[in-house]
Length: 90
Image (tube, rainbow, N blue to C red; front, side, top):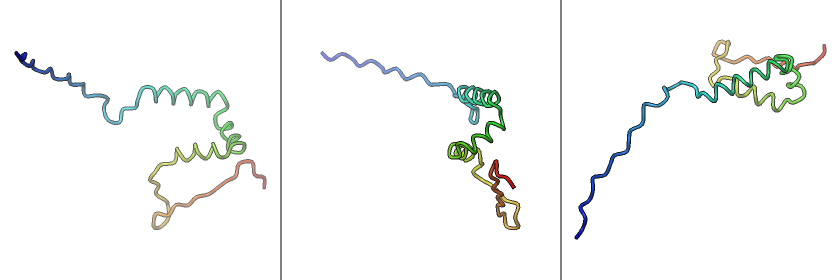
C-alpha cells in the first residue's frame, strides 16, 4: 500500500529587508575607520605626499571619488579641467 502524501510546508517568507539606499552597517563602519586613520596620518598633507610618492594609487582613489555625471561650466556644458602638479616650483 502506498502511503498518502503529506502536504508540503511552504517556506517562511522573509521580511522586507533593508530599505533601498540604506548603507550597509559594515560599509559605514569601514568608512569611519578609514577617515579616522587618514586624520591621524595628517589628513590633506598626507594625501599631498601620497599624490607625489604614489601617484597611481592616489589617482585610483581620485577616480573613485569623481562623480559619474559631471556637468561643466562652458557654453555647451564643456568641462574645464586644470591640472596642478603638487610640489612643482615656479
